[in-house]
Length: 190
Ligand SMILES: [Mg+2]
Image 1 (cartoon, rainbow, N blue to C red):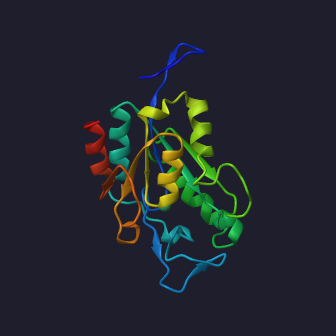
Image 2: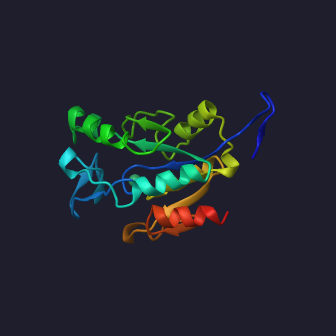
């Protein structure tokens, strides 16, 4: 593990995880769905009823912890601002998320054009988490299902794990996995 020269403390390793498409299923809106003028087929849940954990997520997160990794969600959630989901339903989903074995959750609530530093593909949330927790980014990983996740991770030297979907075949990553259980197996080999 790396050493932080300022404090002489040992830096920790972390697994950064996107939310939608990694922790829970995304929702198919069909081929004629647009968000702020951009065609988007698979989206975050727009109601609590649409929210569904992927199977085995809690078990895999527990294993990441046992392997010595912090587990930190870094997620863009602009849909309250866009009006696709009510704040109340959004809060219900985030409350369920907090029932998982996670160490922290960082959320960017901004819209695409807000020009913030936190919205992925910018690595702002990862940088903030690294400062807060004392994380060695060179020994940490990003797990996501989209190019913006991989780009945010690569920007700060994270190893990248892509959840394998038909709609992200053109996205580059260090490794592709079918589920978080496969990500656990991969992490054991590095
Ligand atoms: Mg996603």
